[in-house]
Amino acid sequence: MGFDAIEVITVKRDRGELSTAQIDWVIGAYTRGEVADEQMSALLMAILLNGMNRREIADWTQAMIRSGERMDWSSLDRPTADKHSTGGVGDKITLPLAPLVAACGAYVPQLSGRGLGHTGGTLDKLESIPGWRASLSNDEMLAVIRSAGAVVCAAGAGLAPADKKLYALRDVTGTVESIPLIASSIMSKKIAEGTGSLVLDVKAGSGAFMKNVDDARELARTMVELGTDAGVRTVALLTAMDRPLGLKVGNALEVEEAVEVLAGGGPADVVELTVRLAREMLEAAAVPGAGDPEEALKDGSAMDAWRRMIVAQGGDPDAPLPTAAESAVVVAPASGTLRTLDALKVGVAAWRLGAGRARKEDPVSAGAGIVLHAKPGETVRAGAPLMTLYADEAARFDRALQALEGAYEIGEDGLDLLPLVIDRLTA
Ligand code: URA
Image (cartoon, rainbow, N blue to C red; front, side, top):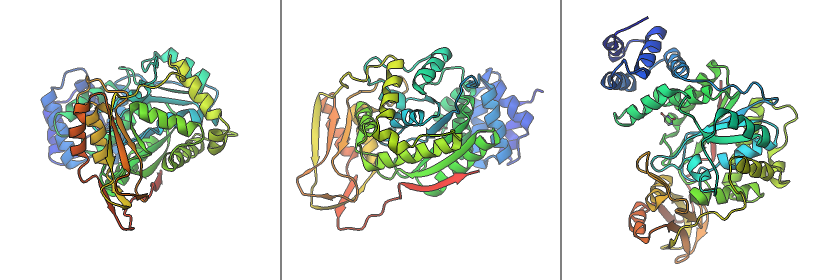
């Protein structure tokens, strides 16, 4: 059934409810180029201002899924589980998590993205491993998952093409920050990816998309409802992004930290969140006789799965990772307790050092980034190193240091930090 774009726009402008048929039509017609960008921009702004109810959001998501292909893993003999993080600074959890969950008995098909702005993308991180390839055909994906238990690769152009077009339009029309639009964008891709179960890591704090816990909770609730309505067993954890995760921020640096975790070491917060998410994924996927994630980190089986996964995608897990040519040390200006370390400021500094990109087509530096020598709650001494900055060109340090102004506070005891895991939401 055909509609008129103006009719659909005015329903939402006047705070009305869009019908299933109207949503199907407008998403399909926009993807085919029959609804103009300026008309879709007006509709997106009306949605941002006036919202959508649960039925409208589910219809919007399903229409985006129908715009492309839906992956099918039914030929696999074990349950599939995936995780999606809304993104943060130092969030390299996918890297140890995917092989860890594979080692414990689930298949992990994970289609990931590249970073834009101050949060890094999983593919950018993995591409710092010499030879590793992000783009795989569907047959190659199946082959990798069969041999390694997990595959982390780029989503092909055929998956939710409506979302690709809509996201690009939202990016330039001030309509990214709408919970119904963010939730449907993320979930259309995750549902189309075909996973049987999904654990969402929804971050809250300065370095996250959602700066406050209430907004993060609302986004998490909306995504859990969408997954559940689509028949995907979905759980969400709300987690802290007021400070960076782990001690290393940057592409190769984060791979290095992920490998430390897979070798049974690594920073406590990264290990805790990796193990917690692994348990949630194994439970959501209902893996019969699932292994214990803590054990799999200790006995080397998660590391074995990582090596298989990297090799299967052309990478050399033993090759030295790229390093940056230049470094600069930031020292503590006073002695005391490191009370805060702002995730956003650290993320922007790493981005300015070359770890992130400003436009989609920009390259990223593999070696650039920041290594933290202290985390909030730890004692620091005046003059001792607080963090080391890495870049390919020394000229980048000034702007990175400017981003770090006011990024930390050293004082007496009295921390005001979010708990690492703030809440858990289920349907
Ligand atoms: N990530 C997405 O995939 N979509 C959004 O709208 C926001 C973050």
